[in-house]
Image (spheres, helix red, strand yellow):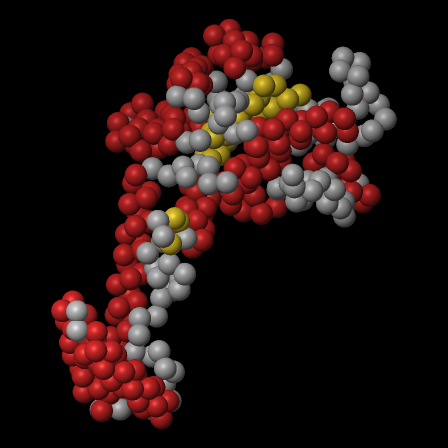
Length: 338
């Protein structure tokens, strides 16, 4: 699972805090029960002594004595449960109560990650990606083909808007199912409002659920961070590391940032570095190839064309259709998970 050593350490500290809290709560319950039922304290001490004597007998090979002590311990446990019940307490009131009874708040079951740790990892990855709320609205469960026309066909591809999106979704699922094997990159191109960000979010959610680290940044956010790093070496060690090493970096709306020579050089560095590190990148843009050549030079455009799979989106403004066309206000879920 794609966490840094720092993130794993943070998780382990959290589990240590859980265990400490469990023990603290146990002590509070014990004091409460002893205060209400005084004989319990002496009984607990007797049971602890019997347990110790039984362990010694077993080590000495004295099975008869061990069996005798075991019966005494069982009898005392039954008496303790009767006392607890009389005081209005459940039988296990004096025992450790774990927040996750499966792993006993260690995070592991027989050396494998418990479901509670897997959930904690996913939550951490979601928080890191900064798009949790977006993914609750925009994912493959809420995706609909109903917005795309099936009749008019593009002269170049021979596909309708519907056919184009079907193809884009199939490529996206292939990207998800084979993620990192080998590393792939996607370039989503098309006019504003055609569904590029929505499909990016669909991909991000699926990969996060598969325990991959995903960082989502708008183009402006991305270059603002890079600019800050140029003047803050400590910041570069932190945020910059995630940008270069996360499993999937999403740069949304490339071309909407304030462009200058710094932007072009840093974009090339990031794209090239992630290719060398075999890390996947997804870029969406409203720009055409001629605009990209003009804004980011041939060096950047060549990297994108040579190392990215291009998904061209149909020229159909979905945002406007969703907002004003009542026929699509309640579009159903038509794309099952695969």
